[in-house]
Amino acid sequence: MDHLFADVSMSLDGFITGPDAGAEHPLGVGGERLHQWVYGLASWRRRHGLPGGAVGPESDALEESFERAGAFLMGYGMYLSGSAAWGPRPPFRKPVFVLTHTPREPDVRAGGTTFLFVADGLENALARARDAAGMQDVSLTGGADVIQQAIRAGLLDELRLHIVPVLLGSGTRLFEHIGAEHVDWEAGRVSGASGTVHLTLRPPVHRRGGHRA
Image 1 (tube, rainbow, N blue to C red):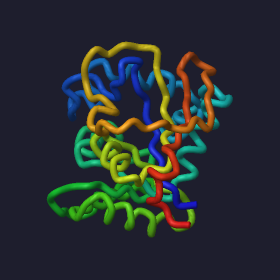
Image 2: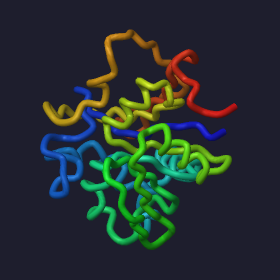
Image 3: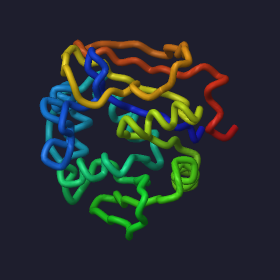
Image 4: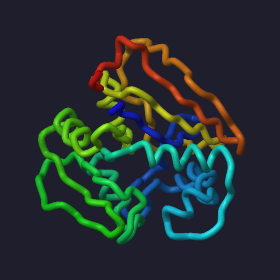
């Protein structure tokens, strides 16, 4: 398989964080509203060492997203903003490759998560993530700039987009720097059990090609 997929929540007006995202507000001011649908799910709570939670299709889909990934890929900004919030035992439990301009030593956390820093570009980071993932897929967790890079380069095979019925007004837009070309995405799956609309999208075949056969 070794597909590259992104899994991200987005507001109705196209933002994946609120304004002023950073260490103090990892999701931006008000951005936690984008993830309220996740916090009560049994699969999310298990990964954070918490009991209980709602079971059903949304919980199963979230667990599937984690389990199908043999490695994760993210930008340095996301690592910086989320590092403290994830704590000593982050939910990834796999290698996480972080794009950066400055090499540094790995950040080893409990539970199997190790952040590895790659300073020679997205394609090299993806190649290392694929080697680590083996026959599993690679999850591109964000932020927006890295997802945009992957789309422009034709590397993204699948986008799991969760459209939350809120308007943030400002923040970080997911599709702000994609370019002027019209791209018709293919909808593979649509659901909306909690009021959040879950879309599984794939770019046209001619835009893909980052994965190995």
